[in-house]
Image (tube, rainbow, N blue to C red; front, side, top):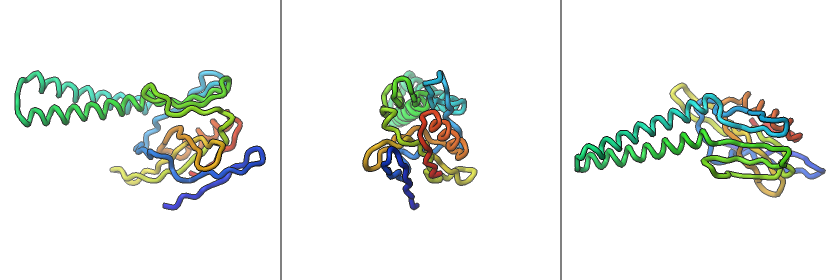
Length: 200
């Protein structure tokens, strides 16, 4: 697939905006995991939406079920290879699904005009944090397609483009809905007073 770059001008300087998706390109299955929250006039956030909460809680529920399987296997007192394999597989399943579910529920991006900062946090850690004056534009980007049971699903990313040489972008969120990604990009660009680079 060919990725086409775009350009954005700021303060008389022309910056190159790469068209290659930022990793990881996640599969959303058509779900709209995020929503735009406006806690105050100077603070906006991209947070888990209703579908995101549903997916996250379902993953955590599946992890809890796997933990019960591990606990029951350990309490049964059976020794042997089969029991050990069940414990290992169920434990790995619980860990993977639990972390993924918590990742969905704790993934939040804040744009604070009063503090002059934008940041993204997930699982209690800061993924990135930048000064708002460094943000040149909001990028809406087509990130490719994924095959599902119902056919091919198109993926999109909403990223922030930063000042500097080379590819300086930070990911805000992914989406399976082009119109929603563009709408989010326009809203955020208006809030920050910067342009949108539409490569969707």
